[in-house]
Amino acid sequence: MIRFENLTKGYWVRGQWKTVIDNLNATLPTGKSLALLGRNGAGKTTLMRMIAGNERPTSGRILTDGTISWPVGYGGSFHADLTGMQNTRFIARVYGVDTEELVAFVEDFAEIGEHFHMPVRTYSSGMKSRLTFGISMGIPFDTYLVDEVTAVGDARFRLKSQAVFRARMANASAVVVSHNTKDLYAFCDAAVVLYDGKLQFFDRLYDGIKLHEELMALPPKAA
Image (cartoon, rainbow, N blue to C red; front, side, top):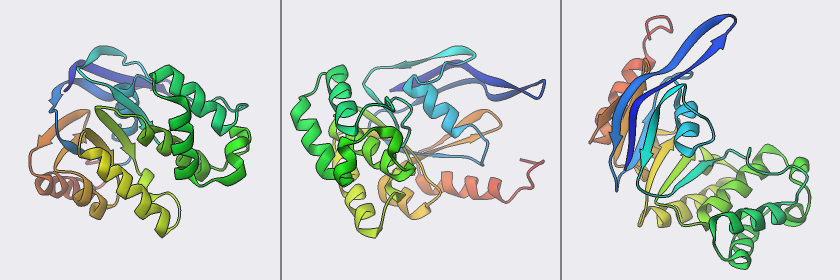
């Protein structure tokens, strides 16, 4: 369960206050893999980062009753001067999982070769995504936050990513952001649409995608 209580988030933009999340009160149900939908700039990434604890709300709070991953694809928690292996070891200790098992899983999964033993600052964005996805999938969480990561790499690697993600979803929930409708139908069974700072829950994924497509068709000023 993830519950938002009077959740508000905004930023100062060129001297003007822009509200991204507006006094949000909602509960995301347990045991669902949710597609998080919304136009560009609607606040999807901001909401994901607040759920993970990487970003604080302006006001209100988020309550959870389980473990939540960091946003998969976000490498901000990595120390740039440490190697991929050293970062993996550090994260294993933080989350209390077997260090050697996680290192072996990530090195095999990420397929970045000798770069695994090189500083993360030398990585391309794709390598960082492979590393963070591998670490996330190697740690058992109750809820995974996923942002387009199964799109990383070539077709073979995408299939590999989708397979391990599907295996994790057998015993966990997820909040998934993706512009690929096919992926949403493959991995999600419900949807939440973020629009004008509010969330609307749809028990049927199709209904959420339908509203999202209608909102995408609106002119930018009207949306």
